Length: 323
Ligand code: SF4
Image (tube, rainbow, N blue to C red; front, top):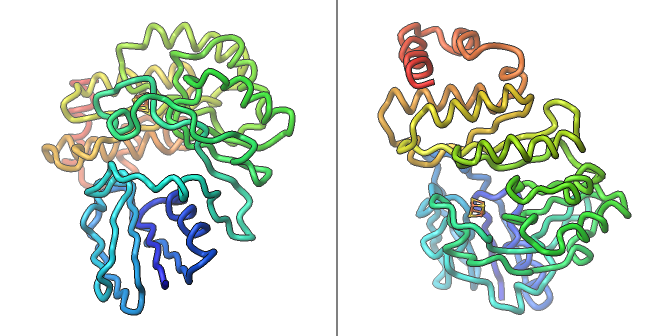
């Protein structure tokens, strides 16, 4: 068969890479990346798949649902957590296949676990992946000197300290890029985290403001083992149904503690009232670029970013009245 694999919007699509390795044993396989953004955009794509027997299309982000049309082939399957079929799973024989890497790639990717022990209201993981379960092992995932783990909540895995020790013993450059759960930090795992050959900042999630007091306590442990300023980054989730003050309090908490904020806007932020939408665009641009966040006030940032004085005033009104 002649098979086309389409990665719509992921930097590195695990399902597509596994399918490539699986199918290429017996078939002619081609793989393309469309490079669509995870942010709202207007792009779409019609793929002429004449001559192919099968086409598989995978997307991660909801906003890319229905943006790809495939013509010329009767056998097309869409999947991925952002598609209309987020519950679709790979068959076990493909799931158990290692992903394909190009010769010039220097970083491995993988999940040791899938699912999560939590049930955050805004998150799709509990719905589509369920409770935390073991999925793979570190030895099998790491094929390079660098590795990026995509686990949703690695600290909830009962053997996470053994994983960290394995990486330390081999001096593997690594990153857990989906955000660590600070509620599960303790002296032992934080000491091991501090000894990892880590890429960039340690990323945690500060999605729910109600945990701030607990975070204050955990930060003492975190800073004991990693005292360098700005070595922690916190994902800060925001949905328009939340108070802006809940966002700004977390941002200011980050500043006070020399941690980098990284605002994760819910998709609804692009569909909300115009002034709030503009405010969210500006505050996100400010917070998510450390060079600005660390070196200038939000007001100065706005004056550099916009010439429209009224826009600045409207944004500052939200910032000052709800902050
Ligand atoms: S902790 Fe993270 S992965 Fe788990 S449910 Fe909450 S947001 Fe999702």
